Image (tube, rainbow, N blue to C red):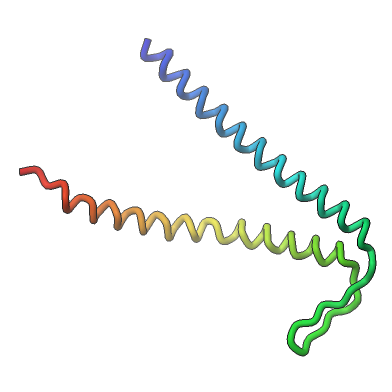
Length: 104
C-alpha cells in the first residue's frame, strides 16, 4: 500500500513539473507571437535618445525584440543570484525560529 502511495506522489510531482513547463512554454510562445505581430505592423524606423546619446534609425520591432531578449537573458542570469540570497535569508529565519523551540 505504501508503494502505491509513494508511486502516486512521484507521478503527481512529475505531472506538476510537466504542466508547469508547458504553461511557461505557452506564455513565452504568446509573447514571441505578440512581438512578431507588433514588429510586422510597426516597421517604421525610429531612433532612441538617452540624455545626449542617439542611436541609428532602426525599426520599432527590432528595438522591441532586442529589449525583450536582453530582459530574458538578464532575468535568466539574475535568478540564481536571487536563489542564493533567498537561501541565506531562509537559513537565518530558521535559526531565529529555533530560539523559541527549546525543549525543557
